[in-house]
Image (cartoon, rainbow, N blue to C red):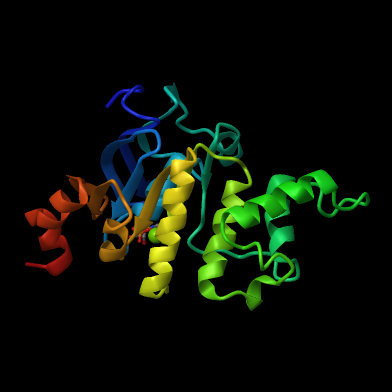
Length: 245
Ligand code: ADP
Ligand code: MG
């Protein structure tokens, strides 16, 4: 893979933790406004790959290209400035701040607690983002008053606050009922139609396959399949990894 093979290109990414190879020579590309699924059992290396791509830590080996540029080893804040954002699997909003405050914090990290107080302009922007993700009726609620599905929306809103071109979403379906998965999938597709490119991780294969355009399946840090939902479902290596037969 080379720098121009997609909006984001991972070329030969490896991540070692001591003797453990969490991600092993993984290569893939994402095209603009694609929803790429990232499927694999627990411990397969999905979150680690996200961390290497978004600069939480650098890969041990390999190259990350973003918009044609080698961004390997850039810090998280630089990736965000470049137009990349992510949600975290373990999401901890500020519990004593409202939904809209939590989104506003992501817009202006240093200002919320400043003596001058909240600014109207950024407030309007935070409200707009909440409305885009379906939290318009919940602006003043505290995070722990939200149903789980709306917590996921809040985490998405926080990521959308940096106005990303590419959004990496880690396990959005965990703990959600089927109808919530369908609604969240509709939201992600709407955001995609408005211009955002997505990589979505989940180990809920059924939920993910109804959302995505294409999927990459990883097992023990290695790519074992890359294709459309139909191709993935029929792939013998995928069936073996998932069904153990
Ligand atoms: P997934 O997100 O697919 O469930 P992870 O990427 O979280 O998997 O983990 C992949 C492997 O790397 C697991 O064996 C996990 O225990 C290990 N791992 C993840 N992060 C660290 C870390 N910071 N230090 C050591 N081992 C880690
Ligand atoms: Mg994970």
